[in-house]
Length: 189
Image (tube, one colour):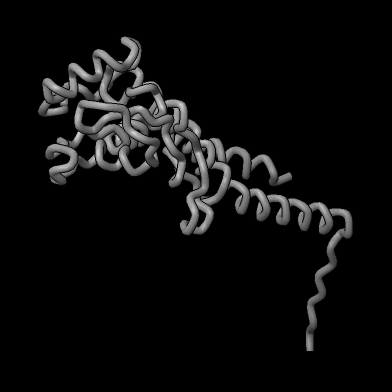
């Protein structure tokens, strides 16, 4: 009976094993949802959101403006540099960040973490000074709108969803994925 034998050069085998391990570890570090590619995309998305809020990017698609009462309150109580939609003392802009939301398995997100409070002094009804509120709670109402009479049937003024679509269609996500592939490839030596 013929029995083939295979012999490896020990130095080549050690180099091959190191390369396989390095590639494997890099794939884990770069891979979604908790990897570096998702983190880099979240950082870029925060920058897109800030830019879009500061420039009032989607204001033209909002079907209705402020009520006259609220518009007057905002003009009288908020400095002129914070007059655009999504800007009222700039709590949203200041608190935008990339983070790992609890209960998501460690994936990255861009936005405002649950529980972060604003600076207070805001008024949904256009009078008085309100107490501090969770930013994510009122951002959800502004993004999606509300039929709750407390908010006077607040119309949706989306910023996060269209900014996300804008980011994906810009090709930046694909560029970050390509960067990860280059990093992984560089580990094969």
